[in-house]
Each structure stands twice: as structure tokens, then as C-alpha cells.
Length: 440
Image (tube, rainbow, N blue to C red; front, top):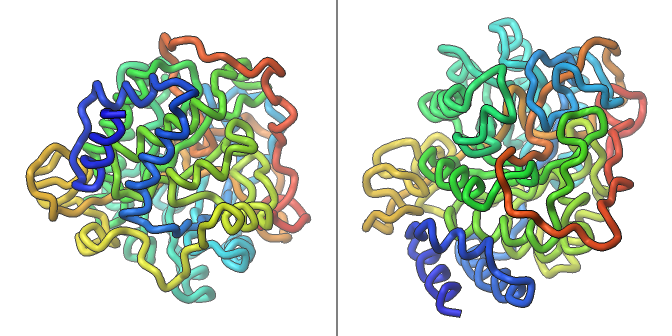
């Protein structure tokens, strides 16, 4: 297929596909799906080999969010029966992180629900970061705390944070239909603050909220312009008790096409399969490893993932290997950009900057940068230590990274004849905020 040959060539050169080419990937038929996966797999292996980076979520504060993100089980007004608790203590968070690191993770993502941190919250999280770093040599720490104010990113960086996650989630044109308590521009500004502070930026999307193909392409191109080092791709988990509970718009095949499109548009960034992979990719998860080079291990923020051992077995059985703690995730040209591969300078790749790499610019030697995570909160739910924090039964909450997609006029997507697998949506009852061991 000429389209796929063109996209592979562009991906190996870090050249930006046209919008028409990106849309064409999403429009390919199921008959061509394996060809699409094989083509995007060539680009993935060129930049990342057969390595899979493992990331582990620690939900520092669950629920209690004043934001109204429609996809989130922690949103204001949510009736989803999720765990609700206030801040974990640094030693509790460190125990949670240790469980994930023991399972093979090299990055810990510290997530807290809410609009954004107060200066006191930043001080609290900074202490947690230092505790985790002191007790786990070489660990990467990504914070996901919502919208940042002046100086907060710098303080997190000084405390030892390597990255900051704040997802765009959906296209600018459809954002107001998903969230009304903050704007798309607020999110962009937070990613830019992380870049400016020297943090590696992590920012991604949520698919499956009813968005159109054009919406998906719009948000991925916007991410390219922001130049994150990592792009988490979430698939909406339709929690009962949220406005999007009935949005079952994804099939495993569509999820694979979305991941392939992201890989072609940002070929040399860390593409992470995030929340919802077990719900929507199901038995086709191993194929997704040919497209993404990173996953979350174990549970998410408020939902359960598959067993950590099953993740490790899947990676090995598919012929991939877990990325070691001493290995550099990003390609050399991005990692050398500084700030942990932040790539926020003039030579940044996968962005619209002069001399950019994963773009339509001519300089193929440029570097890229990226960050992790979410709206009004961030990374995605994960397990924590056995020491349970104080449960609080107040209004819902919003931490984004779980999985979501934009609300827009989408082309209908056929759900398998068996109907949506609602049985695969399980609220997390173990790990952080409980007396049970985490899933790692």
C-alpha cells in the first residue's frame, strides 16, 4: 500500500505526515489492519527496538475534585463508587512506588485529583518525591497534579521530579463539550510551564468519547506542536455514574488504528498505552506493543488493570523485553536535548519549532521532548501501600489519565456483536487507600 510505504519513510526521517495521510490511517479497513500495524511497527522498532518501558501509577489523592470533566470517575457530581481519600503520606507513597518498581517499572507517576496544587500541596509532593528518590536509586518520577501556577514546576524540578504529565485529552474544538471548569488553553499553558522549567513533558489524549477522526488528528497534531517526550493514549473507561457511561465507541481494531496514527505523527516519542487498554484492546493487546513502546503496569487511578504478572508475560510472549533501569528510553537526539529529553528549545523535534524533527522541517537531526498526563489531575489510577489513608466521603473527583475521548460528531463505530464488555470495568479496591496489597 503506497500510503503505508510513504508513512514508514516519513517516520524513519521524523517527517510529519500530512493530515490527509493521518486521516487515511484511521479510515483503513479491518482487512488492512495487520499491514497498518506492521508498517507502524517498523517505525517503532527503528526508534525504540523491542523495548517496553513500564510505568507505575500512585494515586496520591483520590476523588474530592471540583472539576467537571465528563469522562472522569472523580469528577464533581460523579456517583461512581470509587475509593475516596485525602493525601497519602510520603512513606505510604514510597511503599506504593516500591511495589511497582519491584514489578519492573522504571518510572513512578504521582497523581492527585483536583484542579491544581496549592503551594502547600507542591511542598507535600516535593517531600514525597525526595522520599521516593532517596529510597529507590535511579527511579524516574513524573508528577501529575493538574494546572500549575507560576514557580510550581520549578519547585517540583528542584525536588527531583523528572517529568510532568498533563493531557490535552481531546481537540480544542470539542474541549468545551467535555469540560467547562477549565479551558483547553489552560492545559496547553501547564504543559508549556513544565517545558520551561526543564521537566520532561508528558501529554496525551483520550479516545472513545464520541469524537470524529478529524478530532483525533487535531489533538495529535496539537500534541506534536507542544513537543512532549511521551504521549499517553487513553481509551475511555465508561464508568457508571459519569456522563459518558454509555459511550462504548471503540473496538480493538479502532484502538490499534489510533495507536498507529499517533506513532506515524510522532515517530520518535514514547507512545504509552494508558487507561482502558484491557477494556477495549482485550486479547489484541500484544499487537499494540508493535505500536507503543510504553505501558502502565498493574492498576490505574480508580480502576483495576490486568495482573502485573500478566503484563510481564504478555510482553515476553509477544517477543518484546522490559526496558532496564539503566537504559535511556528516548532516542539519542531527543535525550540529548536536555531536561531529561524535554526538547523545549529551538531544535526540538516532534513539534513545530524551527529545525524540528517529527515535523515537516528539513533538519532530521533535531531533538524532541514530551511529558505525561492529565486534565485537572493526571496520570491514571494505580496501586499503593498497605497503610491506608483517611477515607473521605465527599463529592467526586477528577484525575485524568485514566482514559477518555473527545465529544464530537463522530462517525459511528461498530461495537462487536456481543455488545460492550461492561464486565471489564472494575473499580479499584486494592492498593492505595486500602489495606490490600497493590497490583504490581
